[in-house]
Length: 295
Image (cartoon, rainbow, N blue to C red; front, side):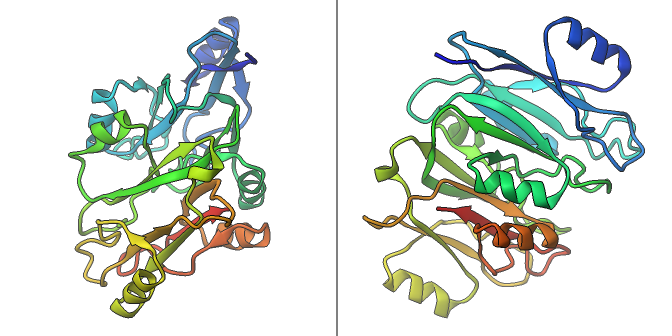
């Protein structure tokens, strides 16, 4: 067994930085609060070869998101990533979980990006992205946490939820929430995409689609795609947006998926061979958002 990430923590001041360093943590030297004028916030991690590696890292940016994580046994790091940014109402917290079983693959490395070029390269090279921008709604740089797993994983199941009622069950069943609301705006429900991973490429999905009208829905159905239940743009007044998936023998398995808010990032992903579906998940709201995935 090699070294895995066994602990993570967040520092929000110089004293905490000194304490974590003395406890054997390694710092990721990228300020998670960059560009906001707030505290210098850093992510720290420990490596080890024990039998309890971290297998999940999630984020929460509202109280409702936190409920299912807590009930499912995730550990909350009680340090606001927007500490001192002047927007204390926009709190973001990290959570982690040490799981076992066929849907849990240990994390062996962790990293942070602050620009779209590095993002695209990491996604292309098999890193897994925490979709929540850690400067979400407070300005500053686009900050994302990335994870590298000990084995190659593939997307074997997907889901979408338009309420928080099943979050605990999804987390317990091995699903990972893409921590960005596809219905991001002033109205409507919080809608999140979810995925589950496997190390067996033969069990993986091979294609994803987004429909925005009845013609597209009928076409994908005729082509053998299956639809997720939740409207990704629920109650926005801008129509119905659904995600479709397919598993075809002989096609390339999907290794990773995420959602992108930053238009420049979309362009960089496409340049690096990542598929970005040109259908706005957030139509009718104040942002553009696109689904990206890599075979």
